[in-house]
Image 1 (cartoon, rainbow, N blue to C red):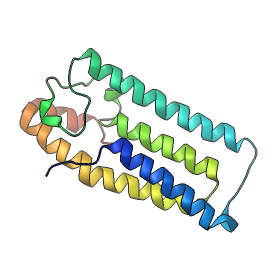
Image 2: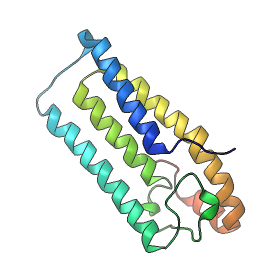
Image 3: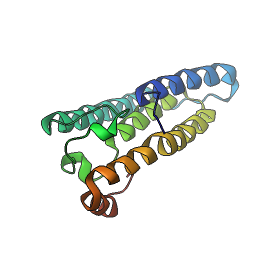
Length: 150
């Protein structure tokens, strides 16, 4: 399966959908004290995880692009990768969660679930198959000890 849509574009489309849903169902919006601060915290943590993850790939001198996992030259299993096999996608999910909190629309929870489902099925599963072929038992051992998302 050829992966065609970069995950950041998927996240951008999801954020646009969340905005549209929040506007369409404005009567269901909620607000609470420190809502903006909490939303900002989620976004900052998501961005930090993404930047740290990209930095780990750069340090290992391997490809960052999720569209061509077969170009990976090394398996990154240190740092944040000790806790999640997919920190870049986790970072995007946290950013989207921050946007959902900021928009205050409970309906946007469905977009978050759809994002996780889509990324798992169309990005992570194909990547895992390619990485298994590329790194064999090293990747299998890594998969066995580190969770996919958290």
